[in-house]
Length: 238
Image (cartoon, rainbow, N blue to C red; front, top):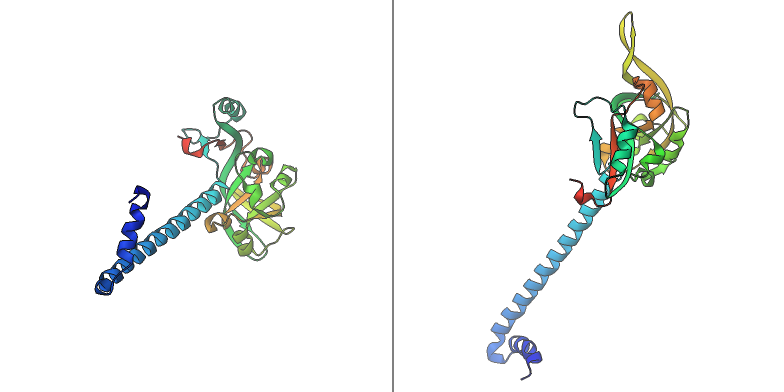
Protein backbone atom coordinates (compact mmCIF):
# COMPACT_ATOMS: atom_id res chain seq x y z
CA UNK A 1 0.00 0.00 0.00
CA UNK A 2 1.30 3.41 -0.91
CA UNK A 3 2.08 5.74 1.96
CA UNK A 4 -0.13 8.47 0.48
CA UNK A 5 -3.17 6.21 0.68
CA UNK A 6 -2.64 5.09 4.29
CA UNK A 7 -4.85 7.80 5.85
CA UNK A 8 -7.57 7.10 3.28
CA UNK A 9 -7.40 3.37 4.02
CA UNK A 10 -7.84 3.98 7.76
CA UNK A 11 -10.77 6.33 7.17
CA UNK A 12 -12.55 3.95 4.83
CA UNK A 13 -11.84 1.05 7.18
CA UNK A 14 -13.90 2.69 9.93
CA UNK A 15 -16.55 4.29 7.73
CA UNK A 16 -17.36 1.36 5.43
CA UNK A 17 -18.89 -1.42 7.38
CA UNK A 18 -20.14 -4.95 7.12
CA UNK A 19 -23.43 -6.05 8.55
CA UNK A 20 -21.76 -7.41 11.69
CA UNK A 21 -19.93 -4.10 12.26
CA UNK A 22 -22.82 -1.68 11.73
CA UNK A 23 -22.88 -0.50 15.39
CA UNK A 24 -19.15 0.30 15.37
CA UNK A 25 -19.49 2.28 12.15
CA UNK A 26 -22.45 4.29 13.47
CA UNK A 27 -20.45 5.20 16.54
CA UNK A 28 -17.53 6.24 14.31
CA UNK A 29 -19.75 8.44 12.16
CA UNK A 30 -21.28 10.11 15.25
CA UNK A 31 -17.79 10.73 16.66
CA UNK A 32 -16.57 12.29 13.40
CA UNK A 33 -19.65 14.51 13.17
CA UNK A 34 -19.18 15.58 16.80
CA UNK A 35 -15.58 16.57 16.17
CA UNK A 36 -16.55 18.38 12.94
CA UNK A 37 -19.35 20.35 14.63
CA UNK A 38 -17.08 21.22 17.57
CA UNK A 39 -14.31 22.50 15.31
CA UNK A 40 -16.79 24.45 13.17
CA UNK A 41 -18.31 26.06 16.28
CA UNK A 42 -14.87 27.02 17.58
CA UNK A 43 -13.94 28.60 14.24
CA UNK A 44 -17.18 30.63 14.17
CA UNK A 45 -16.75 31.84 17.78
CA UNK A 46 -13.11 32.85 17.21
CA UNK A 47 -14.04 34.68 14.02
CA UNK A 48 -16.83 36.59 15.76
CA UNK A 49 -14.62 37.48 18.75
CA UNK A 50 -11.76 38.64 16.50
CA UNK A 51 -14.14 40.78 14.48
CA UNK A 52 -15.68 42.24 17.64
CA UNK A 53 -12.24 42.98 19.11
CA UNK A 54 -11.11 44.70 15.91
CA UNK A 55 -14.29 46.79 15.67
CA UNK A 56 -14.09 47.81 19.34
CA UNK A 57 -10.46 48.89 18.97
CA UNK A 58 -11.28 50.87 15.84
CA UNK A 59 -14.13 52.68 17.60
CA UNK A 60 -12.13 53.49 20.72
CA UNK A 61 -9.10 54.65 18.73
CA UNK A 62 -11.38 56.65 16.47
CA UNK A 63 -11.65 59.27 19.21
CA UNK A 64 -8.63 58.53 21.42
CA UNK A 65 -4.92 58.92 20.58
CA UNK A 66 -2.34 56.18 21.16
CA UNK A 67 -0.44 58.22 23.76
CA UNK A 68 -1.32 61.25 25.90
CA UNK A 69 1.46 63.49 27.26
CA UNK A 70 0.64 65.43 30.45
CA UNK A 71 2.60 67.39 33.03
CA UNK A 72 3.44 65.31 36.08
CA UNK A 73 2.01 67.93 38.46
CA UNK A 74 -1.24 68.21 36.50
CA UNK A 75 -0.80 71.84 35.45
CA UNK A 76 -1.03 73.16 31.89
CA UNK A 77 1.85 72.65 29.47
CA UNK A 78 2.83 76.22 28.57
CA UNK A 79 5.71 75.41 26.22
CA UNK A 80 3.68 72.78 24.40
CA UNK A 81 4.88 73.79 20.93
CA UNK A 82 8.51 73.04 21.78
CA UNK A 83 7.46 69.80 23.48
CA UNK A 84 5.60 68.77 20.33
CA UNK A 85 8.69 69.41 18.21
CA UNK A 86 10.75 67.18 20.50
CA UNK A 87 8.16 64.41 20.31
CA UNK A 88 8.18 64.58 16.50
CA UNK A 89 11.90 63.72 16.49
CA UNK A 90 11.24 60.36 18.16
CA UNK A 91 11.06 57.27 15.91
CA UNK A 92 7.68 55.84 14.83
CA UNK A 93 5.76 59.09 15.47
CA UNK A 94 2.95 59.68 12.95
CA UNK A 95 1.37 62.79 14.41
CA UNK A 96 0.98 65.07 17.44
CA UNK A 97 -1.76 67.50 18.45
CA UNK A 98 -2.45 69.77 21.45
CA UNK A 99 -5.71 69.58 23.38
CA UNK A 100 -7.56 71.13 26.30
CA UNK A 101 -9.67 68.85 28.46
CA UNK A 102 -12.21 69.94 31.07
CA UNK A 103 -15.79 69.53 32.22
CA UNK A 104 -18.69 71.86 31.55
CA UNK A 105 -22.46 72.09 31.31
CA UNK A 106 -24.34 72.27 28.02
CA UNK A 107 -27.78 73.88 28.00
CA UNK A 108 -30.29 73.83 25.15
CA UNK A 109 -33.83 75.19 25.00
CA UNK A 110 -35.21 71.74 25.86
CA UNK A 111 -32.68 70.07 28.15
CA UNK A 112 -29.38 70.28 30.04
CA UNK A 113 -26.44 67.87 30.35
CA UNK A 114 -22.97 67.68 31.84
CA UNK A 115 -20.28 67.22 29.17
CA UNK A 116 -16.60 66.49 28.74
CA UNK A 117 -15.11 69.36 26.79
CA UNK A 118 -12.27 68.63 24.36
CA UNK A 119 -10.74 71.62 22.61
CA UNK A 120 -8.61 70.75 19.58
CA UNK A 121 -6.73 72.08 16.60
CA UNK A 122 -8.84 70.45 13.83
CA UNK A 123 -6.01 70.07 11.30
CA UNK A 124 -3.59 68.53 13.80
CA UNK A 125 -6.34 66.36 15.30
CA UNK A 126 -6.86 64.60 11.96
CA UNK A 127 -3.29 63.29 12.25
CA UNK A 128 -3.82 61.56 15.61
CA UNK A 129 -7.45 60.36 15.63
CA UNK A 130 -10.03 59.38 13.04
CA UNK A 131 -12.88 61.46 14.47
CA UNK A 132 -13.32 63.06 11.05
CA UNK A 133 -14.37 59.64 9.70
CA UNK A 134 -17.01 59.35 12.45
CA UNK A 135 -18.84 62.55 11.51
CA UNK A 136 -22.49 62.11 10.62
CA UNK A 137 -22.84 65.77 9.76
CA UNK A 138 -20.27 68.49 9.21
CA UNK A 139 -16.49 68.38 9.48
CA UNK A 140 -14.07 69.11 12.32
CA UNK A 141 -12.24 71.52 10.01
CA UNK A 142 -15.00 74.07 10.58
CA UNK A 143 -13.65 74.50 14.13
CA UNK A 144 -10.75 76.43 12.62
CA UNK A 145 -13.15 79.38 12.30
CA UNK A 146 -13.02 82.24 14.83
CA UNK A 147 -16.73 81.68 15.51
CA UNK A 148 -17.98 79.78 18.56
CA UNK A 149 -18.77 76.44 16.95
CA UNK A 150 -19.35 73.12 18.70
CA UNK A 151 -19.54 69.45 17.62
CA UNK A 152 -21.67 67.00 19.63
CA UNK A 153 -21.98 63.25 19.89
CA UNK A 154 -25.10 61.65 18.42
CA UNK A 155 -26.58 60.57 21.77
CA UNK A 156 -25.89 63.95 23.38
CA UNK A 157 -27.62 65.72 20.50
CA UNK A 158 -30.65 63.46 21.05
CA UNK A 159 -30.62 64.20 24.78
CA UNK A 160 -30.50 67.96 24.23
CA UNK A 161 -32.89 67.67 21.26
CA UNK A 162 -30.73 69.78 18.99
CA UNK A 163 -29.74 69.55 15.35
CA UNK A 164 -27.00 71.28 13.32
CA UNK A 165 -27.71 74.99 13.22
CA UNK A 166 -29.22 75.17 16.72
CA UNK A 167 -27.68 77.28 19.48
CA UNK A 168 -26.61 75.94 22.88
CA UNK A 169 -25.11 77.59 25.96
CA UNK A 170 -21.82 76.23 27.27
CA UNK A 171 -21.46 76.91 30.98
CA UNK A 172 -18.01 76.64 32.55
CA UNK A 173 -17.35 76.61 36.31
CA UNK A 174 -14.12 78.54 35.63
CA UNK A 175 -15.62 82.02 35.73
CA UNK A 176 -14.65 85.52 36.71
CA UNK A 177 -14.37 86.88 40.23
CA UNK A 178 -17.17 89.27 41.17
CA UNK A 179 -18.36 90.91 44.42
CA UNK A 180 -20.62 87.86 44.82
CA UNK A 181 -17.79 85.37 44.35
CA UNK A 182 -16.73 83.38 41.30
CA UNK A 183 -19.40 83.51 38.61
CA UNK A 184 -19.56 80.77 35.95
CA UNK A 185 -19.06 81.74 32.34
CA UNK A 186 -21.90 81.25 29.89
CA UNK A 187 -21.07 81.40 26.18
CA UNK A 188 -23.42 80.64 23.30
CA UNK A 189 -22.22 78.12 20.68
CA UNK A 190 -23.64 77.01 17.36
CA UNK A 191 -23.95 73.27 16.67
CA UNK A 192 -22.09 72.64 13.41
CA UNK A 193 -21.46 68.90 13.52
CA UNK A 194 -22.54 65.55 14.97
CA UNK A 195 -20.35 62.47 15.32
CA UNK A 196 -21.10 58.81 16.04
CA UNK A 197 -18.36 56.54 17.41
CA UNK A 198 -20.75 53.69 18.19
CA UNK A 199 -19.79 53.84 21.89
CA UNK A 200 -22.60 55.31 24.01
CA UNK A 201 -20.38 56.77 26.76
CA UNK A 202 -18.46 58.81 24.18
CA UNK A 203 -21.44 59.83 22.06
CA UNK A 204 -23.44 60.98 25.09
CA UNK A 205 -20.82 63.09 26.86
CA UNK A 206 -17.99 64.40 24.64
CA UNK A 207 -18.11 67.71 22.76
CA UNK A 208 -15.44 69.31 20.57
CA UNK A 209 -14.65 73.01 20.27
CA UNK A 210 -11.61 74.94 19.04
CA UNK A 211 -8.62 75.82 21.23
CA UNK A 212 -9.42 79.52 20.76
CA UNK A 213 -12.95 79.10 22.09
CA UNK A 214 -11.73 77.01 25.02
CA UNK A 215 -9.28 79.67 26.11
CA UNK A 216 -12.17 82.16 26.21
CA UNK A 217 -14.48 80.04 28.29
CA UNK A 218 -12.04 78.57 30.82
CA UNK A 219 -9.65 81.53 30.98
CA UNK A 220 -6.55 79.56 30.01
CA UNK A 221 -4.53 82.34 28.37
CA UNK A 222 -1.58 80.16 27.41
CA UNK A 223 -0.76 76.49 27.38
CA UNK A 224 -2.84 73.35 26.92
CA UNK A 225 -3.90 70.40 29.05
CA UNK A 226 -1.76 67.93 27.14
CA UNK A 227 -0.50 66.55 23.84
CA UNK A 228 -1.99 63.69 21.82
CA UNK A 229 0.41 61.37 20.01
CA UNK A 230 -0.17 58.77 17.30
CA UNK A 231 2.49 56.16 16.51
CA UNK A 232 2.91 53.68 13.68
CA UNK A 233 2.33 50.60 15.83
CA UNK A 234 -0.02 51.00 18.79
CA UNK A 235 1.33 47.81 20.38
CA UNK A 236 4.68 49.56 20.85
CA UNK A 237 3.15 52.52 22.69
CA UNK A 238 4.99 51.66 25.92
